[in-house]
Amino acid sequence: MRNAFEAWAQREGHIVRRREDKPEEYLVYETQRRWVIWQAALTHGAKTAAEATSKFAKDPELKPAVTQDEASVRNRVLNEVLDAFSELDEAAGMEGVLKVIQGLKKKQKALADAKA
Image (cartoon, rainbow, N blue to C red; front, top):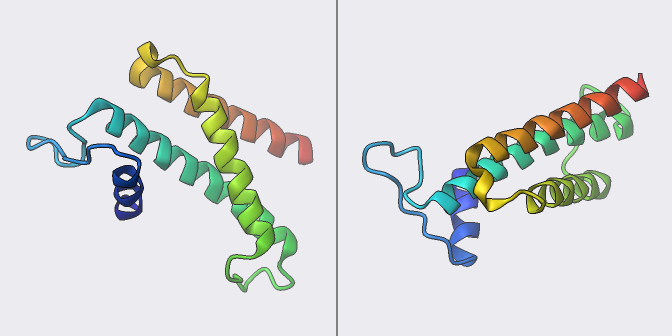
């Protein structure tokens, strides 16, 4: 997952050097912020994609390869996460990122409760 992120970040012109004292964190704040967003998007998308896969699978025990439906769900979720983060003020810092993640979790839970 980190390799995919770093490849994307480099293509977008971000510096992917990591801190020497904390190698799990990036040296540049904006890269670290995008890494947290990337992880949130994947976590949020994995739950939604799992729900979509279970709806379309004939045998729930078999996990099919990525279908077009699953890909569209992933794309929709990624766009939803990017929209949520685009409204975030840069001055909000990591607290703002965490607030957006919590908002996405609440929204997902509300949708799950509505379906149940």
